[in-house]
Amino acid sequence: MTTIETHAEAAHGSALESFVGGVAAWSVTTDHKRIGRIYLGFGLLGLLAVTVLGVLLGIERASDAALFDSGSLLQIFQAQRVGLVFAGIIPLTLGLSIAVVPLQVGARQIAYPRLALAGCYMWLGGLALTFAALGRNGGIGGGDATAVDLFLAAHGLMVVGLAASALCVAASVLTARAPGMTMRRVPLFSWSALIAALGMLIALPVLLGAVILAFVDHRIGIQANFGTDGIGAWIAWAYSVPAVIVYAIPAVGIAAELMPVTFKHRQPMRGQIFAGIALVGVAALAVVSMQRVHEISLDSDQKFGDFVDDLLPFLIFAGLPVLGLLMVMALGGLTAKGGLANGRPRVTAAFLFANLGMVMILLGAVANAAQAITNLELAGTSFEEGATLLVVYGATMAVFGGVLFWAPKLWGKVVPEIHSMPLVLLALGGTVLAAGSLIIAGFLDQAGGLPVNDAEVAAMLNLDYDSSGELWSWLTLIGHGLMALATLAFVGLMLKVFGRSGETAERNPYGGHTIEWTTTSPAPTDNYEFVPTVASPSPVFDMTYEGSQP
Figure (cartoon, rainbow, N blue to C red):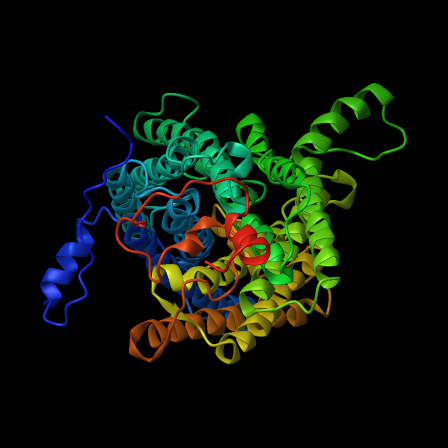
C-alpha cells in the first residue's frame, strides 16, 4: 500500500460535458489541483465576506449609524474574526499548498487524495455550521444553548478536516518526492508548506481538545461551569497571534520561492533559509505551551531572577518567529544582490504581492512580540486585532502572488501584468490602513480583540479615548473596504482570465527554477508523463542558464 493513488480521473475538457457531470467530477475528484482550487475558491469567497463584514462593523464603530441590532453585534464581531482565520487565511494557504506541493516535489498525486478531499468537505461543512450557529445566537457568550453547542461541534468538524488535509501535504513532502530529491533539495515553498502543516498538526489538536472540554463543560458542567463567556478563554487564541503566524508560513515560502526567479539567480544559503522558515514555525509551540502571548515586564524594580524567567520564553516564542522572518528577507536580499549583477530583474505582480505580504507578516510578528511587553499596556486593546490583521491580510497578499505565479500550471493561463499590478497597491493600502489604524488606536487604549459578551462589545463601540478616535475607526473601515475591493477585483480577474479570454501559457513563462516548470501548462491530471529525476535544488535553472532551455 502506498500513499499515492495514481489512477485519478482524467481531466474533462470536452465542450459536451454537462454541468451536472462537471459538478459530479469535481465533487469526487482525487486530483490535488482540483482539491486545492476548491479550497482556494471558497477561501476567496470567505475572505470577501469577512472583509465586507469588516466594513459594516467599521461603520458601526465609526459613526452613530446602527446597522445591526445590539443583540446581534456579539455574534457579528465573532463571525468576522472566525471568518478571517477559518474562512480566509487557512483555506487560502492550505489550498495553494495542496495544489502546488505535489507538482513541486515531482509526485503524480498528493498523498491520500481522498483524505484530502474529505478534509475539505469537513472543513466546509463545519464552517457553514459555525456561521449557522452564530446566526442563531450561538458562539462565545451566546444566549441559545443549542446554538452554542452547535458552534463548538462545528469547530471540531472544521479542525478535524483541516488537520486531515494538512496531514496529506506533510506526507507528500516526506514520502512522495521525485528520485534524487533529498530533503535538502525540496523547493522553498514546499518546505514552508511542510513546516506549516506540521505546525497545524501540533496546534489544531490542542484546539480540538479545548473545544471538546468546552462542549462537555457547557453540556454537563464537569469543571467549574464557566458558562458561555468562559469558552473564549479556551478557544479564542486560535483566531489571534501567534496562532495565525503558523497558518501564514506558506506565504513566507511563496516570497522565498519568487526571489531567485525574479532576479534570475541561484538561491545561496538554502539551508539558512530552511532554518529561517522553521524558526517561524516556533509560533506553533507558543500556541501549545500556553495558548497565549508569553508576557514580559521591563520594570526596573523587579527581581532579576523573575526577569530572566520571563525573558527566555519571550525570546523563544515571540522572538524566534521574528528572527526567522528577518533571516528569510535578508537571505532573499543576497539573492537580489547577486541577480542584479547579472542583468535587469523581471519584477512581476506576483513578486510584489508575495514580498510586500511577507513584510506585513513580519510587522504582525513584531506586533505580537510588542503586545507581550506588559509595560505597554496593550492587552485588551485593538492592538491585538491590528496585529492579527497584519498577518492575515499579509498572507492573503502573498497567496494572491502565488496564484498568479502558478496559474500556468493550474489553469494554463497567464494573467496580464497590466491587470494585476494595480491590485497590489489596492491590497497593500487596505492592509496598512485596516491594521495600522487599529494598532495606533490600541496605543490610545481603544478596546478591541474578540468580544465574549455584550459589555465588551459596548466597550469596543465606545470611542471615548480622545477626539481622534473616530478618525482611526474610519481609516480602519476604509482599509477593510480597500481589501474587499482588492479581493473582489482579484476574483473577477481570475474568472475572466481563467475563462476563455486569458492568454495561453507557455511551459515556463516566468523562468521558474523547480521541476513543476518542466511539465505542460496546464499540468495533466497525473502531473508528469515521466517522473523526473532531480540532481539539484534548481534543476530547471541549471538547464536554462547552464545547459539547454527545457
